[in-house]
Amino acid sequence: MESTFPVFDPASPQAESIRDLFVQVLIISAGIFAIVSGLICFALYRFRVTEKLPVQDFGSHRREIAWMAGPVIIVIWIAVISIKLILTINALPPQYAKGGTGDDGIDIIVTGHQWWWEVEYTASGIVSANEIHIPTGKRLRVALRSEDVIHCFWVAQLTRKMDAIPGHENFVWLEADKPGTYQGRCAEYCGTQHAWMNFLVIAHEPDDFNAWQQREQQTAAAPSEKLASDGAALFMKLTCSQCHAVSGTQAKEDFAPDLTHLASRSQLGAGVIKNTPENLRIWLANPQAVKPGCKMPNFKLKDEQLDQLVAYLETLR
Ligand code: CUA
Image 1 (cartoon, rainbow, N blue to C red):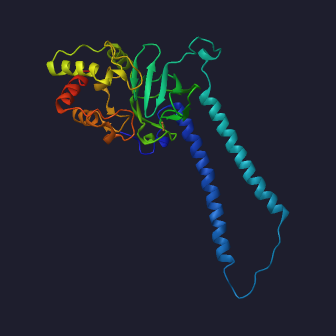
Image 2: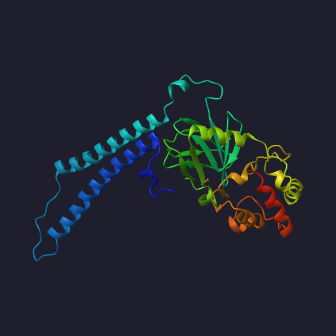
Image 3: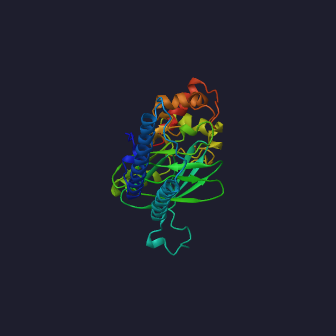
């Protein structure tokens, strides 16, 4: 699923212009590398140890000026094309240009937590975690926040990198040309499980996106089956409900990922394992063994309790 070289496989106009800049700088760097290593090889060969001393030469102002000016021009050129690109990909489209629209036209609020991503859709009120669903062909304004330390939001095939900083809101534009699943990562070291702070951006055709949105807006129905309803009762009785939210129940906390549609997500623990009933059971039995240092403690649940909780959580689709 994941592209091997995502930067070279852009799926949005923004990522395409980043790829183009990257290729330009790569070509310039490769040229410099070839010239410098060529000169080193030439010098090694031409001035290899021989019987007699080569002609002693002490400096040349012309050459010194040339090798100072050359790099300065190259660095200025790279700065100009980089700044131009940054200004282009950060630019507000006309409908936002005047600003002050109240919520600044934010479509999605993404909040970094150690070590997962909270995702809120401002128009529909949907709250989810580690998965961002978007319609194709639409530029969405994403606000980036952090609950704890500095994280960095990066979907190489779709957007630039942008830090999520506590107490300061940043923005990126998120857009995908075609439907697909795009890998997102935290790109700023943020503690023990920085490596497992992944997320997915899932781009749908607009109709499919609307269907997803309708499903996701539904609150969780009370489970009818005995095992699952015992699990629901246990979920509320144990401390699960003091960190997580399940809409339509009394679990309303946002310290940990919202679980209203947990079973419809494809991964657990911000990408650490696939979301299957077996893996969910392994996770609940001891999250610390799966993702050491994560904020979910080991509740030392009994087998029977694990069965009940898994049965309940699997109803949350
Ligand atoms: Cu969050 Cu690295």
